Length: 638
Image (cartoon, rainbow, N blue to C red; front, side):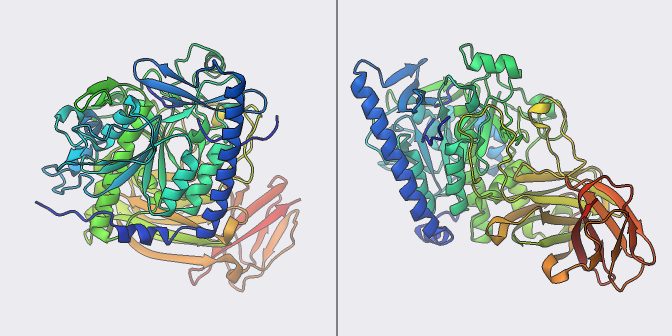
């Protein structure tokens, strides 16, 4: 199939003064953007958008009776946006006190259990949707002015108004109060979303909501695909590393028409997410029922419609779960209208509101905002368990969002008390280097260590192949944790080979750009190491490290550049033995296979390693000198 870039996709129906984002903050954030890269990308996106509009205009001129926009259900909408060269029609299609309770966001409000007053004051999100939110609605009018800024000259639309209300409705009616009810919204329609997203991100926008995606198509390859749209969004995020898009997973798990019904029959409900929902640097949101009180995973009940992952390369999608069933919010039919809607469209704005609250709280305490990878990592790190197994899955992602836990982790970042200490660090890994941190932990709650990073866009994208095995992770960072001779690895899933299986944690994860290690009943000292496979694109990679546990304390941090600590060893390739030229006896050498799995440890007086039992292939090895310097090397077994 001819390679083709499309821009859009479907709306998925179904008295404390808080410091917040200022114009100075926006300028400061924009200074971190890749300005040269943004200029080049904007030119490319404008060209793609122009070509799309020409194709659409030609089609409509030749088909004057074709309805460009149609209604879906009571308040949904579907709009034709493009015609691919093979004739495929591309549609943009639409896919709350209860939301705040489910997310535990109410604990951050004035009068909440945390004793803070974080309600979205002076924070702003952008919403792209099928039309404008009704800016004159009573839930958006404050002192005669609207909290909604209309960026596009289009009509009011129920779905867009409902989404905006879930984020920012002020609560004149307590039943429709938004998650970040003191925040404001810039409302866009979806027609030129990518160019507008890039412009907003480059001028300091922190978060945006996208409750839409690709409409029902006739080609099965779209399901799970890392397509041109996902790749372009990853590019926008990589150039602007404070910007985090929040995307609904879709409502296609109960689809009765082909090709959705065919995909469900073939994949048992898995591999149903498509379009920008498969981007790496976003949060993709699943919809669950309201959780009034969380007690255990059984408290979280999956909706009947929420689309399940994985992406074709096996990445964990969706990322997180939020209430999306029977969400009451604002409607556009009048300035007082409200209504119930269900869908992942209703779940994603709840997460957008949570991001606003967490960014506001972090800035209030530390006078700067978190990078997108940090706030995404924080939400996934602190999620409550959901589903049948411990760890992530392709249904609920990492579990149910818990804004209260996220806020506590932020609060405890600089705590001097070990019983309430956490680690949140934004770091950079240079090419051929290893980052290490040593911590002590004890208690009944797990020691959780995670890394998250904004990955470069993949060099290629899928444009017609059904279920390719291509991996789209560019900079493959690896985290592992060692205590004595025991190594702990991050969670990972099996992809479409076994999407229903429980996750494993016995080797490195080479597809996801969020990795988390969980250690139950921790006791003692643990060494965290972050390395990478291959060569890092750009020569380095920013990443965020989060650590939480009972009785946590940090002992040391170091970064060793492997090129500055080269290992003299021979021969390479080797058949039976490798000799280390280090002038230090009795080194303990650990060897790992290409997947990162530990396979051999050897110690002897002359530093000669017997590798005769290893199968042919490439291996990685390391040892630590008496001075505490960790050295790494790789070799080939003949």
